[in-house]
Image 1 (tube, rainbow, N blue to C red):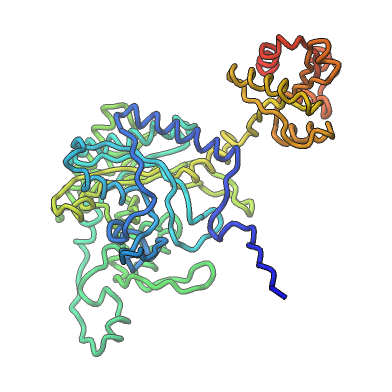
Image 2 (cartoon, rainbow, N blue to C red):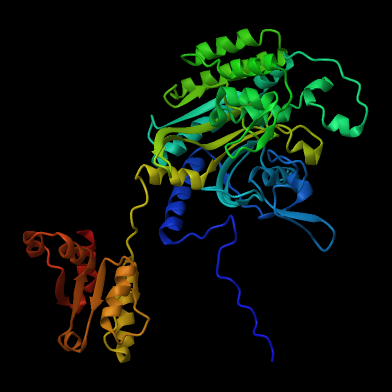
Length: 505
């Protein structure tokens, strides 16, 4: 006897999720609003393929060691390794190189869409998520960085994050490099074997793994001052008790780095003065401070003060390709976590200058800067504040009392649609009218249109106000019911006008 074919499991793959009606509508509305801001700033839209070669993507994800680690990759039939894009910046670098003779310079573009990361999923952390980017390729001026920061602030306010509920923080990788230059070095010990070398802390070799240091101090907000010091030196235990190895710095060097991150003053002028004092012996560090000062002046000239954008040495950004100014948008209000504890919402956007990314393809210096907004996190923040998430209104439902008169019902729904009113005919089994009203309720329909044989004979239709009907069933007063009855009979010719009037109420 042949074995029955196994049915596939109807479940979403681990780390992914499905999005329904209101969620999709809310995201589209947010993307449209942000696109409007980007368009106003002179940026053009760009859509790139979801798939890139692994070689083109490069190894820029934090906390990974192999080029294809952290991405969904496979080998194509022509032996090339392909991967789903992990962000929207790496594909832009490829586009800027591939079409460099056709694009204007500077090239200003924005892009929106899903990206994929093959990482361990967790609460609120998915392997597919949306990003919304804007970048300027071909300008070395820090005016381009200042413009990105101003545009980010405008975008947040446009989607419903008011001033006071967010801050855009700006730092500079050159400043961070200047601090690292100031650290002391030790001689290289005698290493007896490869295994011994691999087990020897990085610090003892006489060089510093800059990327590891930057990734570590980027966790400052999560693990705090002492946690960063532990991670920069000998390591620490995470919440589960697992050991996280340290970078291997001396305790004094780790304390120097933390002191730098805490050097933010009462205003931008004081912060910049503090940084000049810390970096007086570093040429590259002082160059970074000068850029921060210029960004601050350019933003102030446009009216973007410390209520929106500040200089903050604590901003690092984990990706390895940043070369100059870096910025991060942080929401400052608190939410309640799943255990009922208050916590800050945190970062929803970030970016910076990455002057070396296009050079990977062309061999020539091509300056670039840009920002990426985490759309799903931003939507979650708006829901937490009650600014989105209300139930979306469904379509007007034209019920079917006589299946032989479907053409009449289709005529009604056609008139409503041509008038710009969202509407549909009930296409299920019309035998049970109660099921039709249950369907309309499940669709969050505001109105049901009803025409039986008697109404057809007299040239009328019945409009049932489903929203008011639900209110009456709950707690509406008698006066409310009398002022606005939940069901009215109108002439068929007045269908569109009557529906529009009822929707307006």
